[in-house]
Length: 399
Image (cartoon, one colour):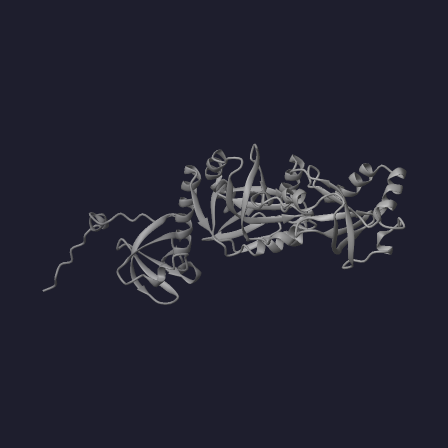
């Protein structure tokens, strides 16, 4: 006897079943891992649809694929609602990127700082990439310790300095965010703004601080400390003549400096004032008329210098060389041993004058030319320079 066939309407069959809502591209969706291999992951989406994560879409910054197991929940981003095989195309990479954007937007809204590592440099700054999101730290937004200070704003030297910072961990804040174009502008300087302001408010003139050399230029040495940076002008590096600031340190060297001036956020520092002033001993060690022996250490058009101590040179002006030569190098040589007579000690101007002439020769020469004016002009090169001007510091910043 033939069995009767019961026909059930489709609406009754679907009654009570989960409604079929196709996921939309860009949406984050969670499912369970059905199967996986090195190239793809199959995902069950609520028992209704099946998703696939394949190729480069399995790669994200957390390397999620390495920790996944069958049956584990996984969150992915929808790339296509349905491909030719009826599968929902998913991406772990894109999901990670969306989560990262969410973190960046939150950090921007809350003015929060976070850590990054640049992977590339150009002359304008440092570049990085996180989950396909490109970030850029402009040179102007680097903190003092990392700012590339070079003489003459040499672009090749700036780039070389920046390239050394690739792979270094930076603490930054977001100062501009553009999700549509996938770009961030970051600032290391802003990340330390509060710390800098607090440190600046606590500074006291006369106090000594430990710092790190952050830049060496023709007019001095920059030292970074407590998120701040100050300038040791070339006149404050050592008590004696400083020809080249590079002779007194290298980038990254630890140094102790004294705070000698604060003008707004411009800080003047001194290295020499943390050592005893050798000029204080000069008046006790030398008297007018004393004869001293020494070597010629430097010859200039206006005279020759004898090293009296490690930091003090005495000047033999050309007018104090027998024969009054037009060029002192015609009769004297660097390294030559001479005996000279002390004819002037000026502690206020930090200079000591010497003569190779006999007292009789000197007396005759004194009648012909005022000594003070001659010595003043000659010793200009040996006097301490004034502290950094606003223009000096502005020039530094522009570099």
